Image (cartoon, rainbow, N blue to C red; front, side, top):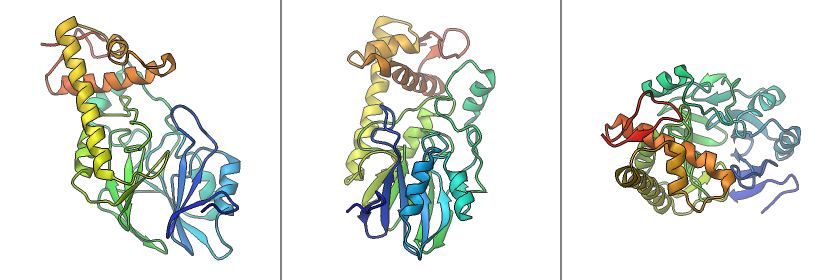
Length: 297
């Protein structure tokens, strides 16, 4: 049921507002969630949009206040409104860390060289008031929210568990797979996070974009199979057609993709290549860069 403010009640204690930022990468827009009543927790305030800020505040009843602002990760469609919302409400901003926080050793090294590209949509100025870590729990008028580290889409990506629901940000969505673009994204970490979530029994996922995922186990199995399939395609092309760059591999593998989406596909392929290189399955000819030629050893 949708309220006058535009908030949709998904279940008892969960309201969703959708930011007006639709695009091929954000679907209908970024989902902002309000949890609880009285004292409310906000998950993913969204882009820096005064109209969306007004909508969040209008969704509150006169008796309600925001007690915590949680951010799954610091992309510009999720985190920039956190600071204006904090100024308006006095609530702290809580997240894993700034945008360069938590990168693996290989991603730190690649970021330092500047040759790997990436940085799409990163909120470079983001900094939480308090850092959250795996196993932390937040209690308030919303009940209890448990913090899960789910790196992959970004190193500082968190998911939030609440009463059997998991707020998955951009890690798991029903309408699309996630972009994994190094050095912010890490395919090895992404797959580990997926396999870890597969051991849980969450009843529903509320993602950063799109509708709720009503069968989390099935969607995770689909995503894992999809990524494993892409990896197998990459290895098969390198085996049969010989050395290739990430872009050449993307053109070969994503043969029916709209041209506008090819850059994102190329970044996903690069993420797979870096992961395969770390596992000694392939190697670049020369330095590891965004345009390197990769081959089987």
